[in-house]
Image (cartoon, rainbow, N blue to C red):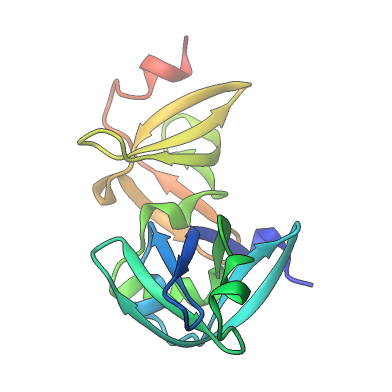
Amino acid sequence: MIKKEYVYKIGVLTKPHGIKGEVSFSFTDDVFDRVECDYLICLMDGILVPFFIEEYRFKNDSVALVKFDGIDTAEQARRFTNVEVYFPLHLAAEATDEGLSWAYFVGFEVSDVHHGELGRVVAVDESTVNTLFVIEHDGRELLVPAHEEFIRELDHEQRRMLLQMPDGLLQLGVEN
């Protein structure tokens, strides 16, 4: 059984496309295209299930059309409507040379060199010009800029991140 702590969400299968079993895949991370992996993990009825990819093609920068092995009709593809898609963390870590998406860091425990433990990344907010980590901190949400310059250490196995934030930036949220 695949456990959620070993994967991270990269998108959603939205609807069937055509009559040959393809499904539209709206993704937030194209790691499936950058890393050697022949399957995607889908959340089906509360269970994470791997489905092998027969082929895929990009429709645009954030949507791909995916054809899974054994899914050959629109009727079969319908069961994938609005299904969340996940990717194995251990394979995504291999993409570090090519860059990871910010979504990869959801679930990481975060510390700062000056303030110590900050909490766990629970979401990534990309709705503004500056991408933000949403960190659960003492029962509140702490918004921290997601910027490579601030990351001092990453431990992919332990899912830990050490930040060094500019002076004064964290005081706004940590000390309130």
